[in-house]
Image (cartoon, rainbow, N blue to C red; front, side):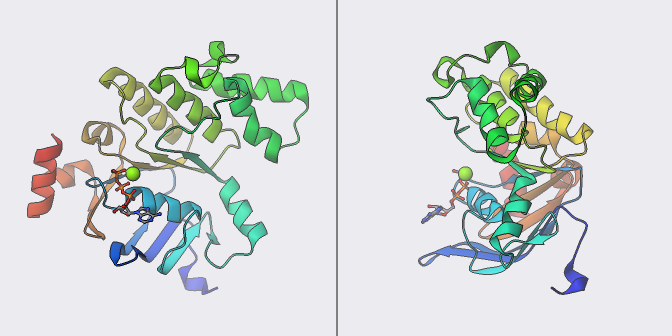
Length: 249
Ligand SMILES: Nc1ncnc2c1ncn2[C@@H]1O[C@H](COP(=O)(O)OP(=O)(O)OP(=O)(O)O)[C@@H](O)[C@H]1O
Ligand SMILES: [Mg+2]
């Protein structure tokens, strides 16, 4: 590996391109996340935000570009190294994606059983702590179908945090939630920053982005049109950004 491109940054993306057939979704995306920051990725529906996250976690392959995840070049790394890199990343999918046939406790236990070697007692304690951190410890024995959307997101977050990731990726964490519940989720994301966890949050929700983001990246037409703070975004004179801010307000 080229030593000069190695970085302390938790995620480094350079020249990322992805097309489906003739539809070019990402057309040369480059950014470097800062450790411990919350970075929000904004953009209209269909601009490739979810595709970007899928590329970052290695669920899809880009057509061109490089991705370093926790210091591992995930496009060239052997499988064992790729798995090591993935263990450092927690992921909260757009639909929470809880296992419907498992209780809340079992959902959170799943990654711990799979990757960890905890005794039954330690496992129980860890599940309790994780669910307590999202204020869901009283609902341990419930099924996902018994929960509201906001509760499901919180359990999804507890599960994403199970392996103590250095990086957490969120795809639309507040979509479909009322403003109060959205604010609770936002608070949990900000809480991760206090624990020095790096977050990347894909969202349509400009209000949440304003509350939580240290930095925002706006995608459109396959390009990153803006990369900066919310105050800079408000000052940005690019016509697309000005219109985007108006529409999103
Ligand atoms: N597996 C796939 N095969 C073909 N096209 C795909 C695939 N995945 C995504 N796309 C296309 O890529 C584009 C970007 O999709 P993506 O889901 O990333 O959008 P998004 O920005 O997350 O939108 P939203 O805000 O609605 O969630 C869309 O045009 C979508 O149809
Ligand atoms: Mg999406």
